[in-house]
Amino acid sequence: MSETQIGYLYAINGAMVALLQIPMARFLSARKLFSVLTIGSLVYVMGYLLAGFAGGFTLLAVCMIVVTLGELIASPTLTNLVANLSPEKERGRYMGIFSLFTATGWSLGPAVGGILLDNIIEPMLLWGTLSTIGLVSAVGYALLGRKIRRRDRPRAFDGVDGNS
Image (cartoon, rainbow, N blue to C red; front, top):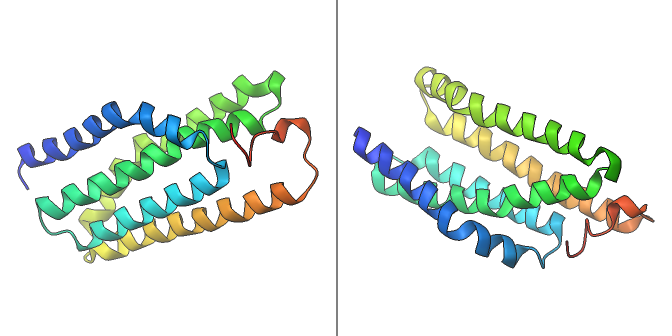
């Protein structure tokens, strides 16, 4: 791929985030957090699996669209979940730690992914592993949502499995 095509892929992501983030957040705010996180993780899984088959710009552009949809679904919902699960007096600390780990992943991911792609003969091995991690996350969100709904929750859990 050319540098121009790579730029187009990043532009697709940026344009989608700029245009869809607020409408998507409004739409998702009326949904159950753990259900949304489960769906967001599954959308990521689809995008990453497709990337394993991508051999050219067109399929990579489709992958970018799907992965960006996963990002638009999961990212604001995760922030909302952290806010709902954290004690009110420690919310800033929880959000800071969450942001630290998120930023670390966004920073290290491209470098580690690039190194792995350069050294792994079969790209599906890398993308399949990422998809598996996403699948495990989806199952984890679904199970955690069930567990929280089943028990009596302290006030800090208000809205976690409902509208918030």
